[in-house]
Length: 280
Image (cartoon, rainbow, N blue to C red; front, side):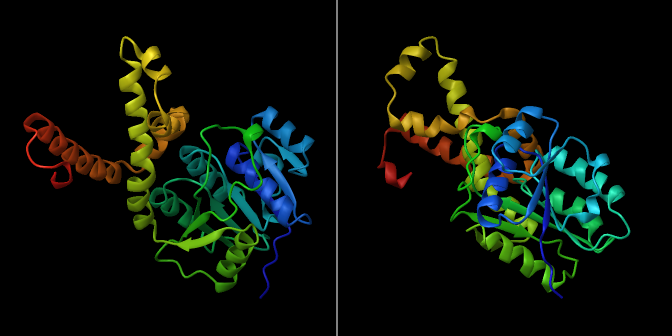
């Protein structure tokens, strides 16, 4: 059975949602895109730049069953809210819908979204494009933001997904020049805690430590690329990241404990100045 994507609904038109809209329009100009957001500035920008065809500020005014693909590109807490809303709104005559998200954690979301699987011919898969900027908002969107970048797909482990659904989604994402990686939700969250969530937290902490110094302005003025590179992430929205941290707290604590242990080993070396740094 062929599964053809002709209509897409993108919920959340900030940096990620707007960049996805641009990438889709570049690769699949025939696909009709509806953008949903309560931020009218974002919607105006997407309409003015022909990144979406239809604008909306509420699910209630849309016939959700007409979309073959729904992309949830909002913060994690809002993704979970929309999964519940879609559960109630998808119509009985739905011809087939894939729902994916773009959240930075997967276990909670995939578990929540699993209620939609095989319900009214709907299938939910967790998604995570590994790309972004320190800036947020539609005005910073880039259609090539995801080009040659990984897109992680996660499945609910107890669900038997039709291969047509899986292959259609993979082919669609490959058409956006993305590199597809499949992981189970738990592995995704464990890995990302170490290589994404921990570095982001460390950037915040380093910036906070220096900003708390009495002469912080002078210090930053003479800083080199090392400080700038390490604190570049600190300009990212804390409101957005706090939801990621809460959703993946156990894994983040695991790596924080390991990091603190290593920092204390270096601290002890600095106190004694014995041995060589590489032996710490």
